[in-house]
Image (spheres, rainbow, N blue to C red):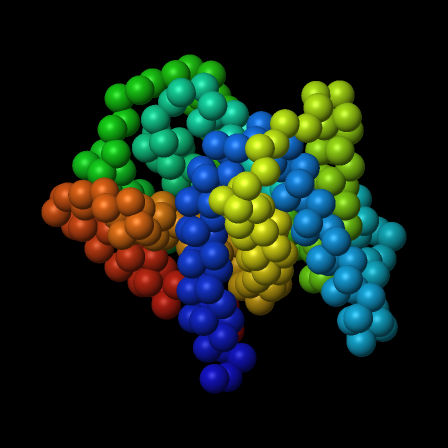
Length: 288
């Protein structure tokens, strides 16, 4: 498999699978810990693994970022790994339906293309709107979206702005992917550590929680974020953001398979609309 196929097909597929299972493991892990405790332990595992990887990394040349890149790297890390996660978890905690949160976050591709307003075309806009319509059909027919909560919506929009701006800024960073993620993880770990020192560590240790923690700390926080950074370095923020529309779709499918949740025919139609729209967008506007 050549590098183009890896970047455009295999890596996005692996990223979607990892991130989708992440929703299941997060739901499981939060049954046995507080939000801050879970995020702190997750970032601790990720930091240890990244430090070990750096130690055994052979290509030390140009490994560490240049001084002019450090502020942008830290800011991006805080947006993607701190603000996004915190406000996403707290939006759910307010009691708002997951469907509404997904719909808010699903507007990310539309918001992202306006960061590159000069490259905005009618076909891009129509494809994003069509995919959002498909997501709306899927969510509203699969999950109840009637549980409205003002603070939940506000927190969801803050999470949306955080991941959109973070993804856009990440695509502009010209630095080693591994060291970039290490610095971002260390900064967010310091934030979570400071909060846990004040708030306390609340965990019920068992095999389910450990499995959740290992998946989120090792597989999602390291492998998925490395894949995200790599894809952003090889493609536009717009193309990568379109992939996030597939995350709720793949999560719903996993939910239906694992938890035997009914998957209505209307949701299947919505899924097909999203998948076809994203495929056309990726094919038509792919970076070479």
